[in-house]
Image 1 (tube, rainbow, N blue to C red):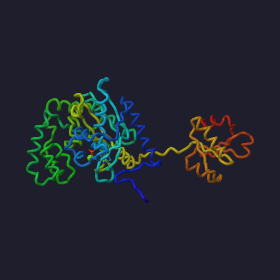
Image 2: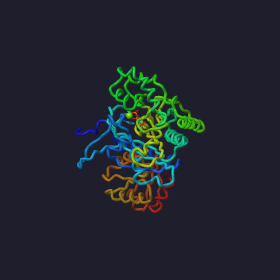
Image 3: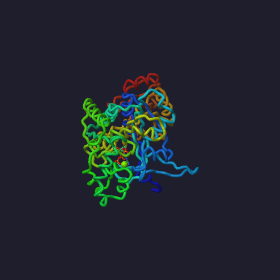
Image 4: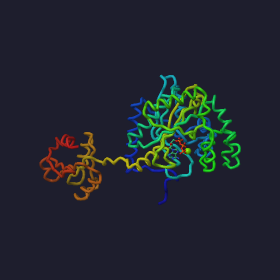
Amino acid sequence: MAYRALKGTKDVTPNEAHIWHHLESTMRSVTARFGLREIRTPVIEQTELFLRGVGDTTDIVQKEMYTFKDKGDRSITLKPEGTAGAVRAFIEHNLYNDALPQKMYYLNCPVFRYERPQAGRLREHHQFGVEVFGSESAYTDAEIISLALTVLREVGIDDLSVNINSIGCSECRPKYHEALKAYFAPHLDEMCPLCKDRFERNPLRLLDCKEEKCKAIAAGAPRMIDYLCPDCDDHFNKLQSALSALSIPYAIDSGIVRGLDYYTKTVFEIISNRIGAQGTVCGGGRYDKLMEMVGGPSLPGVGFGMGMERLIILLESYQKLPEANGRCDVYCLCMGDGEGSLTLANRLRQRGIRADFDPTVRSMKAQMRYAEKLGAKLVAIVGEDEKAKGVVLLRNMATREQTEVSLDGLSDAILKQL
Ligand code: ATP
Ligand code: MG
């Protein structure tokens, strides 16, 4: 074949689209119950937004962004995550003037990261994400964790771990940075070049390195939660009691620091107990300084991103993929040149019925096979006899029963049987 999809990108064919629709409708239903509204932002943004809004010591900015110059010599970047765009739009449209807190979600947001493609790691993936602006309460953190779990449970996955951590704030983190530096300094020679840079610029990121050597060293590092200031400590305690009140089991994982530089306090991940390295289906946290960092008012925020493709991998492994729901309900089979089938199908479609026909007018047998392939529940047959009598023969594909119905009463007879 001449052309192939780019490495790390994936098509969704018509055979798989129903899986996505199933996820999307569950996500819309759950977000509506939690009082969220949708936000959509462009795929491209000024590169500067992500340098500021994601942070230039993150893997995303240092290694993974799709950045290019447009014809006007502007630096443009394909979204490497969803939060920065949502925050930019929130500020640009003065949405902070509306009642706070404001809760929003995005669905199927395309996310581009130049990663080494492997199972569950794509160069273009899609995220379902949630952002809540204007609440500094730990109850909001608990609320969105509960939202994520509700979505996951309603698509059929409940074998999950919620791992939480706190990475403190500008008050307590500097002290922790010192503790981290003191711990890592004697190991620095054995660590990767990026970690040497992290050591200088953002020691917290030393905990996030994916290199085995570095990971092993990071395992013994001091924990941020032992350095929290009273405010952050209180927030973390409130989060834990809220999760308990919601009957959400959780574990504290002091290794979670998350991808963005401007996270504060809560960070969390939701991980499948069944799948290994790529089992992280959802990651999020609080970013109380982000809005200000990108030129907006000083408003707290908290959110998460959930990888749609990772969720589908989970559904596959839990054998929870939804069944495809046939392509039509009524197949129209009229004798003649096909115009009869075309007009009959059209008539039913106008009545809200999923109807189809064979424009190429194959043999009766071939058409019945086609009807079965389409998943038709009923076949409306108009042969010479029926045509003369002005009736339609309605065949139920499951029971094989056939009933004669008047043309006028056809839609009602169909709706009764579907
Ligand atoms: P990881 O540590 O696996 O690289 P991350 O911290 O980069 O994850 P986030 O930025 O938190 O991931 O993205 C939110 C979610 O998006 C992840 O939990 C995951 O489900 C999904 N995701 C992230 N990167 C990819 C990717 N390259 N391909 C597919 N899904 C991804
Ligand atoms: Mg990553």
